[in-house]
Image (cartoon, rainbow, N blue to C red; front, side, top):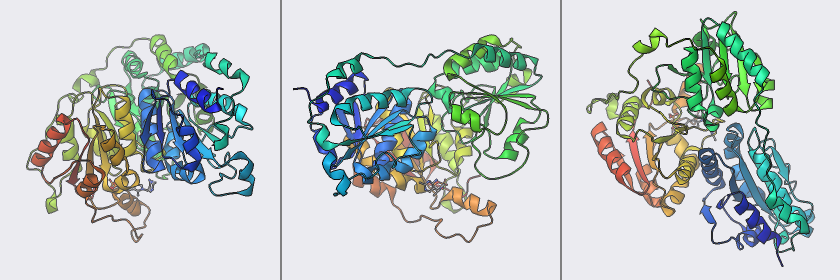
Length: 536
Ligand code: TPP
């Protein structure tokens, strides 16, 4: 007899989802007991880390990842991480074990009461199959829903007595279907946008994370070059959609209304691709756009397009749209200002003696040192919040899939996501730059890195404080707010405790030595650097 369990694994295999990110409980054991040998289980010690690893893995592979959590409590622990997956458009199939079907109504221990309500509004769809024979179809629906544009997380709760039940007769069809979006680009709209760009005197591009997820980076370069347009990365950047060494690259837009308007002044047409318009952070009211500037928006997400406060939007798959735009616009030639742009592909190695007052290192110097030593195709996961500007100013990124940052700003993504990205892409080295505050939300990922020998280089910038909040406390006139310092944490000891070799670097020379060794190792390593509290 083929059971629901047999058929579920078969379905996952059919979709290439042979890695299970999970943290188990009693409700999940009957499912997991049937796991075939060609699958691998990646255990995370906290569900935030489980989801973060899966998020990094799915973003780096561009394929849906499979997650298995424990009932309501495990799902609840993962909710913070789910905010990031939701805003990153990460395809995830998240399953949670439910109590025995006939007992859920009594609310016996570990019942997931109102299971489909629990993860909303951070999932595209949430379901609990109405009977055992609908479990596999529900999982199939989850995979397709998670993957179709805009991609995102889907949640499925499964009563654990369903797994042993005989499978329905129609399951075979599920292994024989393809569900794809037509993928057609909105041609008339692309032609209209190309016409507006051609007629513009000073167009500018603003590129967002979905350009990188669609791997449209190279076409974005062609588009910028043909238009002779400078390129900004959309605010609150969670990925790097454009090579930062290209002379057209201007940096990341600030996450405030007035900051953006200031940067866009002088441009008559702004084309935003693959990002919300805009993901502001600090409230700084003002004019959304410079007077007379027109904004065009290309998005794969109808919600994102509809909720923007300005601009003409077209909802269309990003990859083909960027390619079509690059072809449709008229070549203008390379602007002279690009030739005078700073030689962005030359490393500047900071002076080995450089140090801020008090013996702490300056984060910018630490980042420049990392950049000088890292492989050219290194992948970065960044979760050091007060030094994001320093990061983009010092780290050169050239290839698609080079940068990941929590898309909703929810901390706890960095360390686990780094593990997931490295697992997905063993050919490229992952360097995780993590603040001492942020590290604590996802620190258990060190254990998974150690156990599965996933060779991430974790660099902890230990400034003893929640630096970004110190900045906000000044802006918000809230200097008396308590709870902003996190002194007294020994990350080398923590790393060793989780099985990851740790090392402290107090000078740039020590950092260089530690990084050189870490990059040569085939195991994870952690380097703790004491940095200045205020970013410069
Ligand atoms: N809790 C979660 C889950 N997410 C958050 N974004 C915050 C709290 C609020 N928060 C934003 S930045 C920050 C905090 C606590 C400080 C992070 O400190 P650290 O990682 O040391 O980086 P630094 O700002 O010092 O560079």
